[in-house]
Image (tube, rainbow, N blue to C red; front, side, top):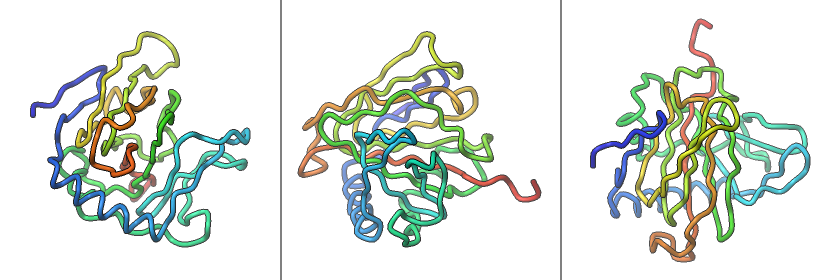
Amino acid sequence: MTPIERKGFVIHPEFLNRAAQEALVARLREILRAAPLVQPVTPRGRPMSVRMSAAGDFGWITDRRGYRYEPRHPEGMAWPEIPSEVRAIWDAVSGCDRAPECCLINWYGEGARMGMHQDHDEADLSCPVVSVSLGDEALFRMGNVARGGRTETVWLRSGDVVVMGGDARLAHHGVDRIRFGSSTLLPQGGRINLTLRVVTAPAGR
């Protein structure tokens, strides 16, 4: 389908068909066996409603020590490699000649949400963030670089891909809620969101 642009966010509806979604979920299950989901807490000690893991050279971590990228899972093991199926999505939509170094895996169960936030912990902000939705529909809220102001929402469905680059690279965004049970992709319901990021500065900087 034709991409849709909203507030600088480029949405690719139905980018992955059902067979591609099922194959990707199977690969993610392998990753999560090696690097299990954890329930993170904010630096203030508040548990987040999503559970997280990652693949790649780095995973994004939040705990009492703060927000940061780490080369190892909280249990001490290295993160699994980013699957080729995920890298292919990045190559197709990112317009970036650097490879993603982190594939953050967020799992949303019933009642989970993600407050408005910026992705700004990366050293190379010229590279976009690419988001992949799998499973239940999510009400995605798109804001502005400065906190506050007018926002827009769109329901993201399983197989949709969002590219946050250019003017949207540092825009606030979040997930108000999921429509639990709206997809049959995950047998127990819920939503998986993948976010692909370049973490380090370019060579020579």
